[in-house]
Length: 461
Image (cartoon, rainbow, N blue to C red; front, side, top):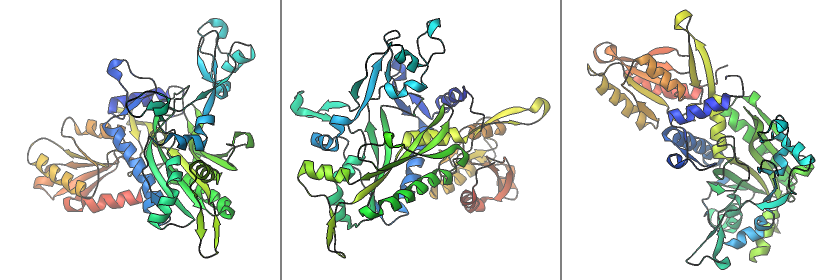
């Protein structure tokens, strides 16, 4: 990976726009702050991240089931959960530059005032000098209205997290899926937060997609499961291609914890702008089930038939943002390599995605647009698609330039159909993105060859 220089994010953002990963939302109207659209490659990257998470959290386990709850829920859900009263950031305004900031972000922010007397100052210094207003609470929930009337009786909210829909469905899942603690309920879905200071590309946005799981366990076992999920979630990123040295686990200090939490640890990643939260694993205790039991009047507990006792399960919650995870995979995959010698020296931009994360798995490239090569290339493409590989067909330009385009979007393998494929020994060239090595493989053996390479893939040093 290129050194984490100050302009690295600029190069990554440029690549995302140029190659169709991420676009500024409403760009033709000047853009809309902190909202982004995912292009053809970006939507595939996000889908692969979600599929990998779902496979690890649900498909490969028999103690976790899925859920898809509504974005708009009964307003009393948010009253009971505490979001209406306490889901807020402390907001301050600068009296000189008129900027608006989260108070807890001030120590890390440079003063945006262009006046030379403020150059190099931290925003926190402005606060110490009395240039900031007093902090006031700013609720992060988006309001809207349900029904024809726009008044307080029809006020509803876009959910700020997916978790509450899981808690309100606890009894439904226990009954219908015949689940008993310890077990989990997983969900992927959109959430909305009216962030005061969104930024750093898709790292912090007002509309985002979450991947959350609530793991319900007997109260005496919550520490065991907390440690288990901390290890499991850290390892998931490594197993999917993120370099271990760019990750760390940061337990929260006591003054950082939510009032209902007895422990929380963040999986953090070393972004170009510094260490930042990638995923949080929290011990939520029985707070949520207790709150919704009280608010709804419905008992949310579990009766243990074996021990003849009823209890309210404790919860361990691994919660990640899909957008942030996709951005992390892309940043960690990014590399600029000098290849060649002398006049042929060039810089190769490459994304070292794990094959199951890469937006395109295989590019199929006829060497030229004649002599039966396009037809054989289409046959190869169909064979690869039948086993679930995401393919891309390209017959335009010199083969070297096509390889470079595929390197830049992180395609692990290229299959080139040439004259020997059509009129010779029936083999094709399979090129590996990471090593740039090329193998001659029989046409009918390409699918098993690539499946094996995917299973054996290791992040290059």
